[in-house]
Image 1: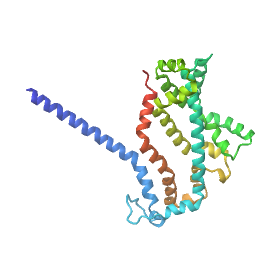
Image 2 (image 1 turned 45 degrees about the vertical axis):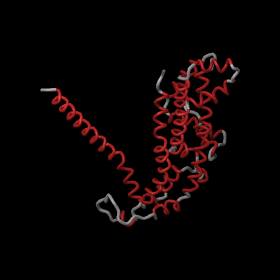
Image 3 (image 1 turned 135 degrees about the horizontal axis):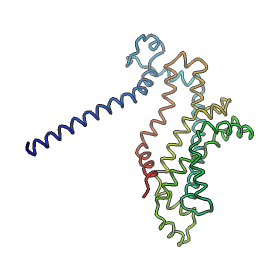
Image 4 (image 1 turned 60 degrees about the vertical axis):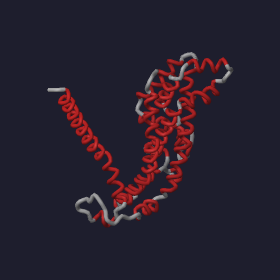
Length: 287
């Protein structure tokens, strides 16, 4: 067997391997994307067409936007969108400030017990979020903050995971830069804003995007702390549609509401997916 035959067999094996991998990835992609396709398809089916289908159809010849109109008229969904935007931007903004300052302190400042405090912080990641819900509920109730934006926002303005992620990213910046800045008389805050933040921008953008997605998907805490429609979020709106019987009877309109709520997150992820991957990889790599 000469070299050309060996090379040919190697290429064939590589081609067969690639075909198998791509077939597997295609099947996996279909499995992942099919629920989204079915959700969007159902949202464009009329109520009569949907209920008359004894065997579900994977297409529709008469799409309609009436379901989207019904979704916004069944509950004040536009108001819930505004509440969610206020909650998301306020929570994310405060969280970024708190997280950046905490991460900088753990990464660059020297104070007594820093390692012990950081270890205690990391240990909090072992505690499920559900265990602190009751404590937060009692605290917010005692402070008379139920059915307020402050009550919604305060329990979500910090994150041990994001502090850890940024701290690891800040620690990758050479110490020589910090020492040179201190020699020039630069304050810690100015060094943070002028040097650290521009260098670590991908990770900070990742934290912001992930927090926005987290806030937009919040359900348990808003459901627990608010019973006034004036402070409902979109997650409460979906549940309200379902509980008043409209969503259970009119599945296409329910799917239309879910599509409207899901689209902003999908768009954000598609636009910033590279930033998310870059920020996570940088935050978890030393050296």
